[in-house]
Image (cartoon, rainbow, N blue to C red):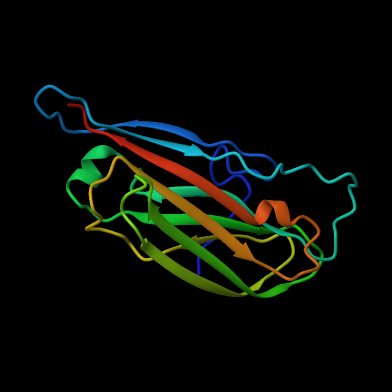
Length: 177
């Protein structure tokens, strides 16, 4: 079980987060400079709570990252990449049986089906706790120009802010021509 503090990484705070990572590859192919871009897709607004009193039930996804950092060399070599998701209990009660699902699909519009789909159940998450969940490392993905990543936290129906329970990203791979 991995625990993290609120200050574990810049940009992993609660509230609206727009992640834009421009990562350059560590290899050079003739005539091109491969790169990877990860962009959070627009979705439901994540409004800040109107009150400072914590809700009884409130959990959310506060950060998404990859280990090692995503780059074109890693993808081109079919190297393993681990998705990490930070989940926070912002409510006053311990939450149990939270299902955190990650789903990776082809973003090219031609390749059908899921490339990765895993659900991890968090048995309990105490009030104020931030936990980083590591998914199974992924490798041997088909080389595509784009992928869509959906991360979804299924919580109790009484969650005060369900808008922060889902994050969606487009991952673009540019290898040059």
